[in-house]
Image (cartoon, rainbow, N blue to C red; front, side, top):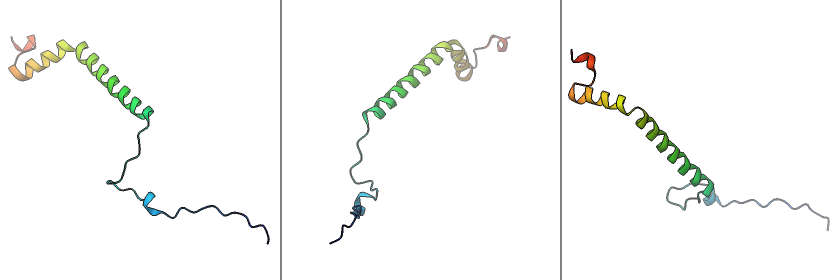
Length: 76
């Protein structure tokens, strides 16, 4: 008998190819989880920095909008 080349095995199981929202979800990589946590912490720190740096300006705008006062030019 002649030597026949081996053909690649075809995976015809379609249940593994079709995505289902009710099926098991793939595990998340720890690297991806750490990257998301680092990004959220960075956004939190930047938000704190911007709000603390411009605290007086923000307070003046808030007073103007809520109480109608906050800028000295408008009081005259």
